[in-house]
Image (cartoon, rainbow, N blue to C red; front, side, top):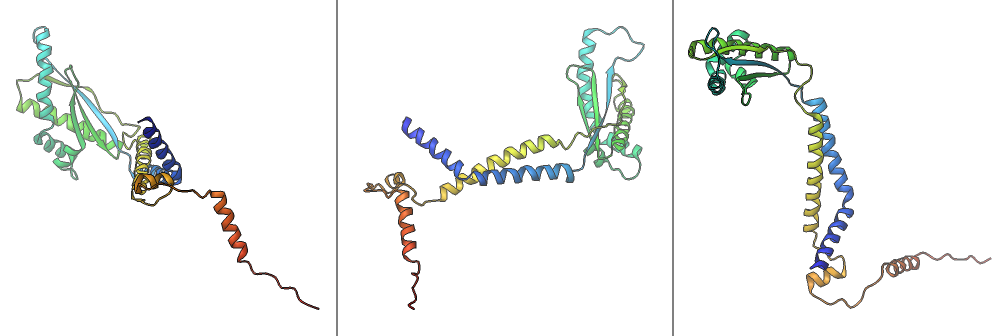
Length: 245
């Protein structure tokens, strides 16, 4: 079994070495294509976020641990309110013409921070200042709507207001290029395997024994074959004739 495994690994190595130019070309093409798309085609997207804290209404008695747990669970309810269509409608109204509730819902994401009383509203846009406007409008619409639809809830306050982002969150150019390199490498290997699998020509005495189950009587060395080809070529050369005076 060791001989078979060694032979298979040797054949695999020889196959890769024989097709290494194809592997390199496909890998380079995929990597360059990803770089061109990431740097020159895909437009950068910026993200602004607003943090909102849910707590006990002011003027009430001292907060105990059970209240903290209750408000942590209450944050999940507020997340669903922030994602609702009524909040999207109010946000679109605050942003003015050109925005629909569908645009707002596609632009924002609302996530609760684990084991806290904090939720975060994030807004994405190709313009960093517009992302701030959407996040701010969504936070304001959420607070006002929550007081109407859930008046018995906790005290909602903005903890961190949205700031203009300086760096885009997408595309991740380095990650895209790395993924394209791996895809190109794996894809080129797959192409090589398919080419070798479809190639049913006999190349060695091992192939004869393996596929035809016939004994090998003799082998013509490459050096002898090459010398024979050169000799036959020389025999076909036209002979020069000497002129008589």
